[in-house]
Every structure is written in structure tokens, then in C-alpha cells.
Length: 175
Image (cartoon, rainbow, N blue to C red; front, side):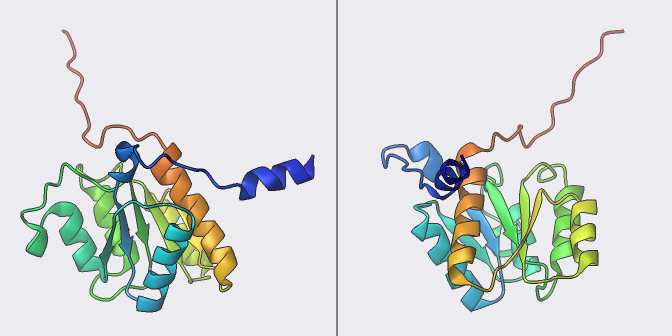
């Protein structure tokens, strides 16, 4: 039985190339370390996740992208990424502050955010969840483990997760 479980966990999911609804979902990677960025992109590709990955290299750029500010002012903010992969240790605006702003804005508060960090601080883990992170994953040192973790996370958030509408609907009450 355990072999069957392990086999199921390591099997790859093949997505037909014609299914453009899946590949239209973007991933926002917020990562300032070029090596970690490259490893994450390679891990996604190795797991056959061919979605567009938008890279923001600091917290300010991530918020500008999500909220349509700065160089992203012309971006259609109705098209949100399927998931945000957020490092905590970022220049300009720290990852926890980015998460705080994402959750404070009605346009992005329901956006899935996965903290993907090398920080092993318990307080970072607790604070990320307190601020509304959907998941917290430590970056493994070993590339194979990192590839597996990123592949599973990409599969889940891009292929399987069903998101509620990002915009909140207001129900009218009848007096």
C-alpha cells in the first residue's frame, strides 16, 4: 500500500498542450535571488508547468504588478495570477509587508499566496499564517527535493485549486 502511495505522489500529470485555459494562468514569483529564481523556473518546467511566470525582484515591484501601479499601470488588473510565490526576505518592501498589503486590498485579498522561503524562523512561519498566507514552504537545499516541492505546489495551485471570484459580491438584503 505504501508503495502505491509513493508511486502516486511521484507520478507526473500530463496536461494536453491544447488546454490553453490552464496555461493562461500566470504565476507571480517574487524573488530577489537570481539563483533561486532560476532554480524555481527550472523546477516548474521540469514538472511540465508551462504557465507564464512573471518575476518581481522586490516587494515594491510585486505590489506594483498586482495593483497596477508604476511600470504596470497599463496592466489589466482583472487578470490576476493563479498563485503568488512569495519570498520573505526582499529589498524595498519585505515579504510580510507585501502579504499584509495583498490581504488588505479588496482586489487581491483572496489571491492565493504561497510563502516560499529559506527562512527557518518560527516567527516568520507564524506571522505569514497570521497575515493570511495559504501555505508556507521552506526552500530545500537539495535541487531534487526543491524541484519536487515546486512541482507539487505548481500542480496544486495552477491545475487543481478552485478559486472563488477575486471580487467580493455584495448581497442585497430585502427589508
